[in-house]
Image (cartoon, rainbow, N blue to C red; front, top):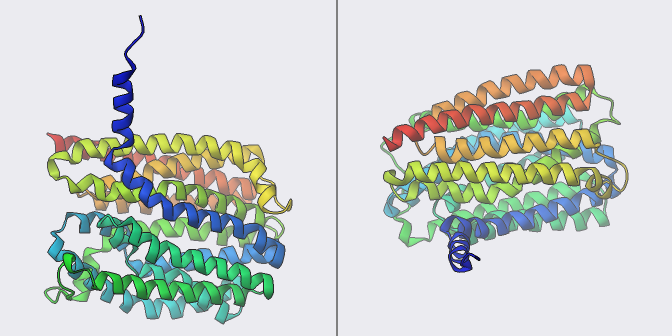
Length: 422
């Protein structure tokens, strides 16, 4: 006796047409193009600048991303869920107030960060300033606002597209005149253009209420309210910035490109998760408190599925993709690929659970606490692992941290969702 395929087909159509799937697909367009341009840039930059200079550029970019987290001050973590829960008339004012605070932070952070980055990496301060500006400009822009208000097209046009065009222009420039200054000048110009365009777009959306600065709260009070989200993103950024600096200081220069490529591939794999996380951050809270428990559990299941698929893909692809991207200069061994795969799975679960579930159910402090403990443990592990075992030791420490963070946040989220449902 054969079963009727109609119910199964109906369930499949329902799943494909689910709002979360549709929204994730729309957000993924930005990520796909950004990832493709980033992957293509690896062999071009290695071929034009050499693998050692490319690795130093990657270290500089890691430091710049850390500066971007300081400028963003947690709005990237808490902003999407917060703005999704606001009345439409209050949204633009919320963004305008955050923009003022972030611009106040941007100037001193950019100045101090440029000096520190140039000193650590040993590059021209102008190059360090331009690379830093490339990273911090989007942190002051409206990317998180577009995520929270479910505007994937605007996210692509004003967040992803400037970065894509800047990277493409930089690669053409490097082919003409191979230098870090050429590369950094092109990416910085388009990053600033994206910042200006995104703010102008938000300012002209009449449906989001008036453009006004909230004067009822001081700047200090506003930043104090952002501390849980900032602490979580700040400590997480330490986890992505300092390991490569530690490895650069300890290992021989010839071994640095292996760690940088493994780190870069892990980040590109993480971009697969980004559109789903962006969709979930607005999807979980927007239906009201009575649906948060069920939607939160669905979000966690989705994260587990993405983590599993991504881990398998990492283990399978990294060993043969690495020599292809590096023009044969760098090969990632299978055992390192396995470590990277488990690390990605932990990252997928911890990110979705933390930023989409814990924030929504009002447990940002647990998000911040877990990020702080994980960062301290990971940095100590990277230091010890690198001293004892070199690059493999550093990668194992990072993977174990991701897995531990995923377990802790999942338990905290499940307890919180149970309380929501009761």
